[in-house]
Amino acid sequence: MNNQVLQVAFNDQSTLMMNSNTKKLTYIDNKENTYICNLENATTSENKDLVKRLKYTEEVLKHIGTSQKNDISSQKDQKTIEKGSKISFKLYEF
Image (cartoon, rainbow, N blue to C red; front, top):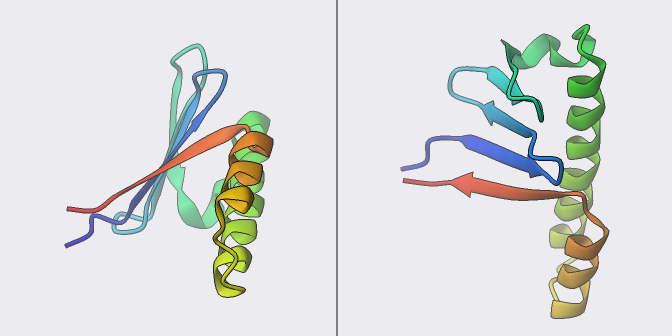
């Protein structure tokens, strides 16, 4: 069973959570303000910080997906992704 939630924790303590079951995105900024919107229109949100982090997350996920498709999974490649990334990913599966 998988609850389809992706959580992204940024270095400044802000968090982005995407739930594919409910089609909702929750963004908690570094001042602990919470913003909730539909995944469908999140990129058009008036919250520029949310949009910027969502686009960054998308690029990192594309990079990870491309790496996996090309079967590039050595320790060196994983360290490069972690070192160059400003975020950490948690995919919860239950």
